[in-house]
Image (cartoon, helix red, strand yellow):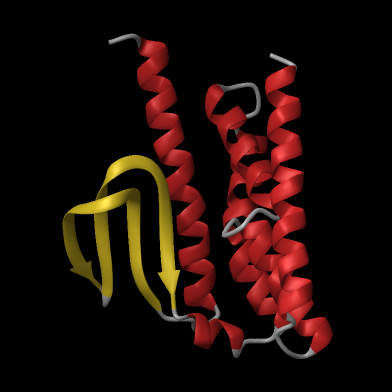
Length: 166
């Protein structure tokens, strides 16, 4: 197997896992319980319970996640909510700066920028929802749909622009 391909795969997996570890440790610091952590999407291949957290390996190795108690998170002050939601991006930015000029640095920078886009279920979207709910003092379905659809439009524009420049 080609060294560059192995480097890319290991760097991508490490960037994803470290991103999620940022969320994990930030949630722990703020007293938000973690229910599940996993690598990959799709059906579960393997699982183990560590420190009251279900850790899972899933079939498709294209993502990672930390599932926390969202009710507990929503009870925290706005600053703590944003800290937990932005911690993964923060980890990726720090790693990108520390490893600038390498493939690992580029992947971390791309992951940080990609997660800032307010696309559904990405960190930028979740942060936007927290801010909107804080401003209105409650859920606002119309505003949340505008944020979700607007974020999707922004994401589509970014991806189209990126692919047109190839």
